[in-house]
Length: 372
Image 1 (spheres, one colour):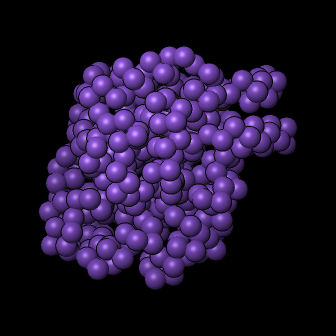
Image 2 (tube, rainbow, N blue to C red; image 1 turned 90 degrees about the horizontal axis):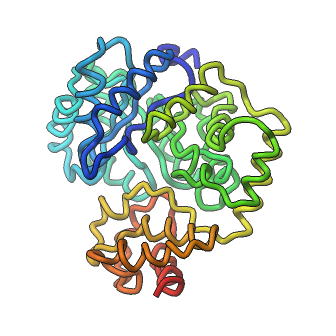
Image 3 (tube, rainbow, N blue to C red; image 1 turned 90 degrees about the vertical axis):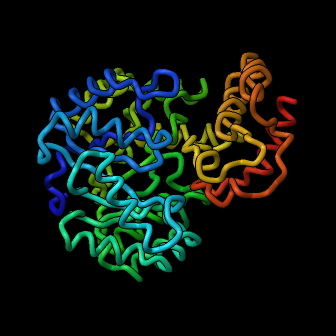
């Protein structure tokens, strides 16, 4: 969009799912991915303090900011609720983030994962006011929010803080008419307030890449690009969207995304019809719409140490493909050193931080019935 014309092209590098070697970021492959991304004319990078247990910011310093001049990339970071409880903690955290990333300022700084509940905490701690002060000091170029809630909640936030410049939302073809995520309605609130949009989860945590057989046939019949290409191009097809983030975790994924976003073309009528048919397939399968953001693990500290997103992914694999390996994985990997689904004590900590507003406690009952 003209307002942010320093952003080159409509694909952003989301750094929540970087390539890993064990528990550490694969630095060499990440460097290759950063180089490929920039060499092909892209420049938008997105991170947060808690991504990959604090390793994302450090990886960007090693792979991006120490290797390229500051004006050659756009860097977004976020203020995450789990890292502060009062106003006095925000500036030291912010300075720590600058140091971790190896920069003197952030191009965008977002109030992270805003919803009706934690918005009240951000207000009480003057988080928005602090961010605007940091903007005045030149340490932030643009202040925005990332958002996980209903459209009415976003309308309230943008009404109370009209100086917010940009909004990051979950937006993909499966959630477009979702009653829980409300992608379309949330996008329309952004339009109402004239706020450019950043898109997260365009492939819904990978769910729109590994498709059920019936859905896969629909896209195969187009004789076109990859599954990811249809999902990312769907999101980028809307006029008010300036960047679609992809959480790329291999160089191959990077090359695929770059191939169709170099000279981006919106979905045509036939392609748009096909993704709607894919939605119909998913809706008939009773899948758990988890995106594996891992907030339920990293921010809620499950007292029984249940690997919730891994269990949901395993459940979906079993439902989609009837894979016997899913049973082995549940009993021999997921629950080997962690809690079983049936051990959930229903404290609700996970549900309070879930961006998808999933009834996790009830869903774990389904998982237990499937595997135990």
